[in-house]
Length: 235
Image (cartoon, rainbow, N blue to C red; front, side, top):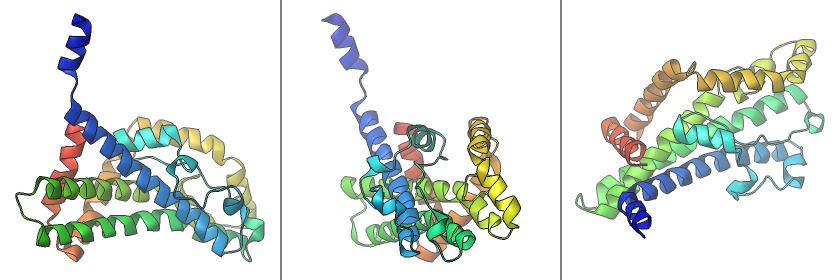
């Protein structure tokens, strides 16, 4: 009984709530990202993602546990890759490039949409509204998470999305050779991510793009950073 009492005394219900909301933000980010890949591929003529049930808003269909945990803890990560068969595209290389680009672009748009809602909250919700401030902070946190996911995947290293865009301009022989070995390169990318190799320039990129989006939406950048900081500390 005493052990149970000590457990309850140390249990931080507020911290758990923020952690769950942070996990929800991650799930939304990766679902939008992977759904956009699959939708773009389908629109370009490849039915693979649709046949595998990946054109879904169910986050469990897109979840990669390691990538989600890294996004939740380190701010960079990935989801379960959508299968694409380039043979269905009229131009396989550019079809792959557009499909790959759809994921990061969707995250940038999600960031922009989140900040637009934040701008609306600042205009119509009373400053002393606890619920309004919580929603504002959640959207700021999701905006930063989504931006981090999008920009990280734009790095032109296979198998990240940015590599597919870069590979589209390479000769066919080099293109298919790199694709053949990208699963091994992925292991290196994971190791570099854990070692923080991408942290410096990626943080600068996030702050730069976030600053542009904040100016476009009229949301003060420092308020966005404070909202995101609250989730990072309490969650």
